[in-house]
Length: 72
Image (cartoon, rainbow, N blue to C red; front, side, top):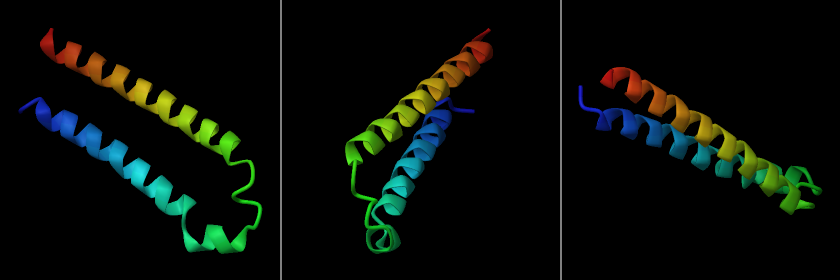
């Protein structure tokens, strides 16, 4: 099996998570239902970004470990 398939699947999962996060964050319900949602956005963006950084780093480490396992 071609190794690029794993890269493509991994990238699609990351993009799906990013897109759905934005869809939820900017949804009509969030904009209209919670008037405090857009307060303190800096803290929320830092927290969300840190989650993504940790998830991406863990995913890359798992991918590298998997590739190294396949090579051996």
